[in-house]
Length: 98
Image (cartoon, one colour):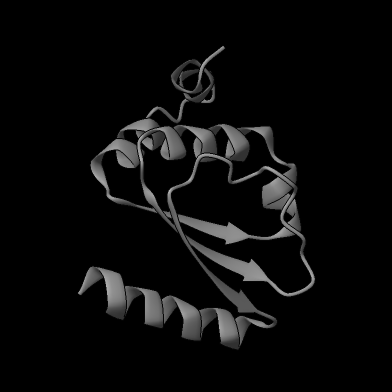
């Protein structure tokens, strides 16, 4: 089953289109994100499309080995609490979307 089939079954086909329309792929790197097979499929699909990855990685969460394999450009921002996450979000918006 490929990415589009999975998203269709979850009634969430818009994710595939959104990934293809943007140059940037945002990842909220929590422990749950790295355990979710759908998130892995999204990541692999975005990597195949050559997207720039911006990862807001929660402190003390390890990225599984090979998870971002094939990604050509990645920037990782670490955060510990919600305030730091909001600060990172503002920084990402200011740098990449304004």
